[in-house]
Length: 202
Image (cartoon, rainbow, N blue to C red):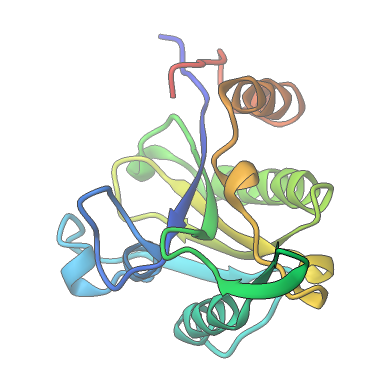
């Protein structure tokens, strides 16, 4: 039976909880670190959280850092020759995520395979994001669901931050053509070692 590659990129706005439109920064981070109210589908959490480009004492500090950086960001606007500054929109993308999953059951996947997949996927995602001026902040490994999978969390890179800019929209929620290109590239460079076929339906 053929196995199909799963990889998804998506961005989420600020918010204290899930909104009517979906997940938020808080729910993404809370589910990632298995806060009980956000992970009721998991009986016994089995996760590993590893900092990559940035280092914080905890992902709670990381979430607070994102919120404060976004609050401090001011966007210049010229009105009748005068420069004014406005705050970021409340629905501006706060965190980007890339999720990749292995096609074999967690209970049947050797640790050697999950370790190799993590190393290959992390290297690829880091290169993909860094080339776009983005920072790969964390790799979150989940081994407590049906299929072993990785969450990669990313934010603007140092160049954006130095200019007091926070812009993730087009990178975290790319158009179909770019998402398709991402899936093809990942399959050609990493996925083919773990999946039989590329699937573009995700």
